[in-house]
Length: 114
Image 1 (tube, one colour):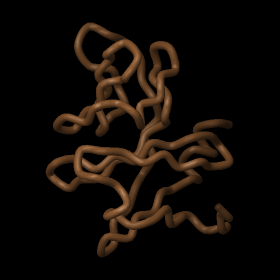
Image 2: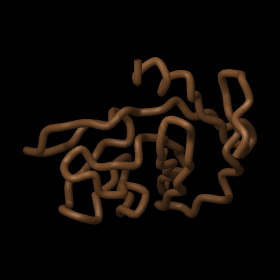
Image 3: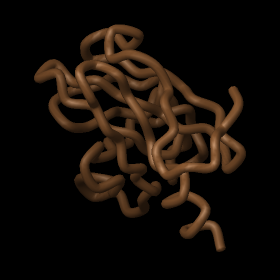
Image 4: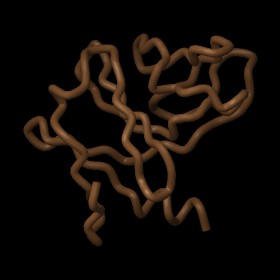
């Protein structure tokens, strides 16, 4: 995907992501998991579990959280933080939904990586 030099980068349509599912987007800063909840909310976080790096985009979405497919860590899609007794977090990425067209803010990733 060619990334333009503006703040918001289109990544597809909400219909590309199944309800309670995810899609993985490759960016120059790494993989981003974009989730769609049963309530039709959309969240984007880094696509690796803070525990052992499991692919969160392959996890089970429930409410506003995802369970890592490797060791069942539960990660908040809103905050990126591990829930329960587990500790750790992933970066959240701003996502915009304009009439079903989804965009993410990559500059937030670049600033966090510096």
